[in-house]
Length: 337
Image (cartoon, rainbow, N blue to C red; front, side, top):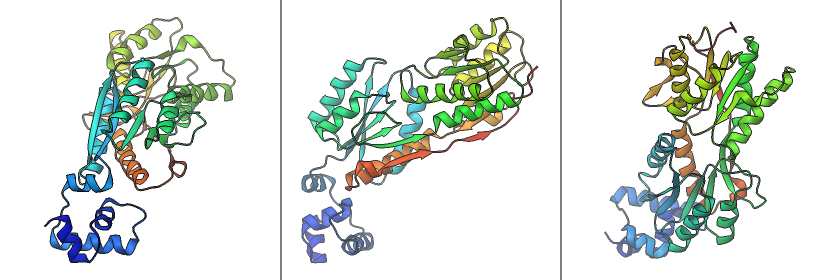
């Protein structure tokens, strides 16, 4: 059945039917429901090219992937795919070099000008992110996965990074640890800044000084975790506990401890962030890993949902979500030796 025939069956215009099926806010809810119910009853699926011609949309969401973050990015994309699977919306992924702000701006500008996407998801925002100002200026709908301090209104979804790391550090302090190392994410991005603050605030509340020699920044990989953890453990006195930025980083910490004949959970304690990976289970690590729980897949699913809301007309200033983070205690944390 063609759109024209389906619209005639409903005694509506093709434009109204197309907009009703696409979720446009100007279509009354009663009309939208009648169109959706009849489409389901008749098994009608609109021709995607015809819908795009009527609505002016291309049916795609754009996202840039920084090299070095593929593991977490894959989980985020999986979540997006779960939500967009039945929406006839594609995901356009553009790889980008790390730490190249000029290239990022050029790619975002090109993506908007090419009209290949209806909206963009911005990952890894910085405190004053030029990409947010650019997309706002160009009039492109966009959602930020994270937060920035830029003055323009924008939609965002974030987790409480500051609270998560403060809680993890405070727990280690409760166990008697006083030299706590932190392997954070890349420097300069907002989530790393927030985690740094949570770590420092936990120390300040206990009257402990901040030691910059116990903090490192880098990509969330096993190799980065191993290299930084090994250098920390070779200090004298060495740290007795670690806050790892991700489970991948924690794998490196575990490996560094084993290389020095140290026992995790006894000689050193470890808490990591991000414990929801289908191929890396915190419960199955030896010893099981204490974590602050946050799912990249769930964030991807919700981000896709929020982008759909933006495309349906919801104002960006009404889309602000800050997710709490749960602390899960397992065998990798214990009393300070």
